[in-house]
Length: 468
Image: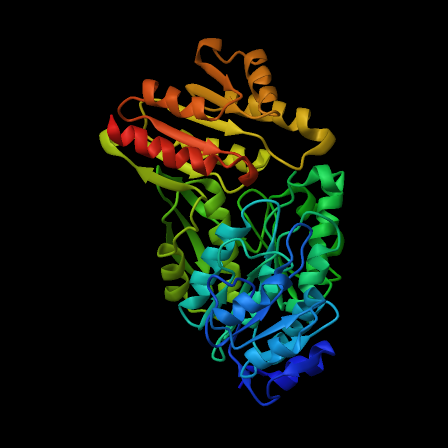
């Protein structure tokens, strides 16, 4: 049994058991009093702007079997009221979370696949997990739980019978993936690409590569899988192929896993590939060349972990995307919305606009917002997006955001018709404009960093267009 006991928790965290029995078994952990279950232990996480420790009693009142907290002085009345509950005091609840997740990970003698990269982490995770799920009982990161809190909770809530974990690792600064790797101890490490996301924090793409390579810091006899078409990863591979066990995938550069006869369609793609020495045709249910690359990554993982050919094929052909990532929404009059609002970078904007080129449309409308965490590179990167817009078949450009003005300026300089460019400081104006101009068979892309909350615009536009 891989569930932790109260004694395990106390031993791991060097905590003090204030209330409860050491023999109680813990089946789940949570940091949210609103969704707490009766079998959960609540961990009060103290952040920069929020202290979860202050809600320990609410967690217990909502049914939690116990709490792990710091900096709380319990009264005799508290202990009497919650005499049937578990209360553990620790020095630092965040450190306790890391210690518990690391200990629980050590109880599983199973493969752990870790995925990072500047863009495409979540979609790659989805397709890799779906391939592995054809053969193994697979746990994967849900939603955006890819940080120093989400990943430990994912591991802590893993069922006993899991046979493989697929864990996404995100970061904004040096040291963050190092921590996640030390907790997860991955056996298969994947880097999808090195782009410009978080370049404002890290200073250069070379530093981004260095931060991503922290995925190896806690790895156990790892197989490293990289996108060999990415310039910095290809260079790293050439310099390190004798040092590490590295598998490559790609379309342009010679790689271990290569797609042949690629056919890109509006909502899908297909290609040929040799799987375990046998040629197969693979159909990808999402359009765009970048999803061909994601599929090649999943195929590589499947082969390493001995998934049969037919199951690899089925895993790719049946996977579904996490919401807000290349989510295509069909409305009346053949109008389509592409909701890609979870995150943004120069590389992901380029990939999405190229994908739009393959879609049948009356007009292609790009609604673009700021890329965050670009620092001193903000002007340069947003100007590059303006150039990319002009390189693709975009009919109308709509922008909003402080940095998005550089997209507009660059597009104008490159010859995009000014009559078809709109810039708004107020995002609400975008909704009103689209209500007026959208026609039958138009395709509308929404793309910006998550902090811009363009997903709110998507919901409003869906509503107003439904009323037309």
